Image 1 (tube, rainbow, N blue to C red):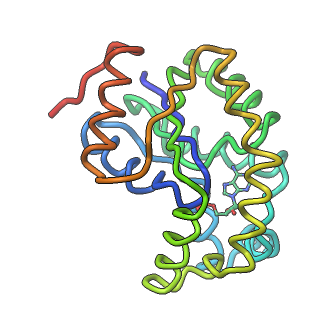
Image 2 (cartoon, helix red, strand yellow):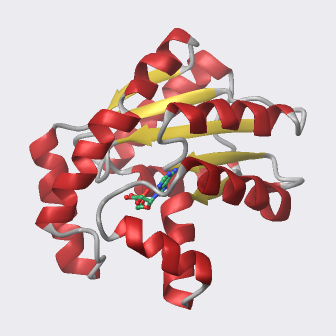
Length: 197
Ligand code: AMP
């Protein structure tokens, strides 16, 4: 199995690069944000709980998020060649849990790819996405909260995974295909895998 975390601030392009990773490496995509938005759209109980946090730009509590991920790994990722984790982990407890969740399935995390994008560009990208897609948390006030939360709760993961020798930062500004080529180079160099196509 090849398990990759795509790491980066909100608006850094995790969704776009995930799509290319799953397409080129035959991996299964788990986006915790998309999963929660799907629950909100379907009006489930989890969706109602998640909406309270998402609309404020806050994180869903770790224990709930970890249970959801455990469940998705059982139901959907079993038997797949590997997973691209997009938007998870976002805290140190989530990162520790991920190690355990993969280990109990006889697997491991192979690489964390960090998409590094200047903050003013992140804001512009999210505002544009909000206008184009109507995504509810892409408004100026919630974006500010999401970036604060990112700095306080998620950014420490960069050091955490650097110390573990798993973090590989790439420049996330510029042309989508060039960013992807950079990611593919890192995966070949550090993990020894190549795209299937
Ligand atoms: P995203 O689509 O990854 O930007 O996520 C949108 C929102 O979903 C975030 O701002 C959080 O409120 C929530 N969310 C997504 N992933 C997580 C996670 N791993 N832990 C806690 N909250 C999350």
